[in-house]
Length: 114
Length: 113
Image (cartoon, rainbow over all chains, first blue to last red; front, side):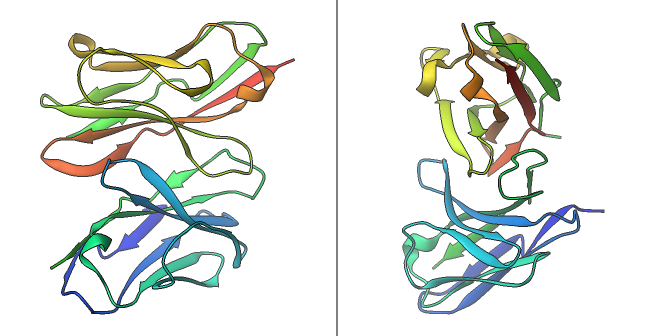
């Protein structure tokens, strides 16, 4: 029973398309995150939501828009995909804002833009 | 299967004590290794990384880690911890041939003043 699940695991798409990556957690956590594994292989925070409310919005192009319909879901929608968007995107969750323990990652979504 | 193990789930230390957090990986090929930290209420931050070269790597805030290939280990160390080091620490690996990061389960570090 996967705690943090992302779909799809792999996504290959053409430049200019719009795509979404979905994330769901069944841990009852209040806080969810999107990270991007950048070209240097590091994780960089993109967004953080606490109980459906946006908390962190790092310098990310407006083409990226997170959506949290409820606290168990945090989806990432990307408009007008560019080659540079190719990366692995990780979703994660943690129990509460202000509490770091129990941080759990999804298995990642590899996005390839061609 | 490729995996990363952190055997210490919760470590409690007094200030000024020395720290060593264990990290082992399972893979026979080339690997990049990372330690991340998450302070309460914050997102992940990179502490240090190993790609190649000197197996002893130094990171931010006085942390260092040593890659021992024969032991498949990448343990995190700090000679003298501070209360502000209270956080959760994640060891991650990038296995060549599989470009996604594989995370350890994390170690909670509590420093008692």
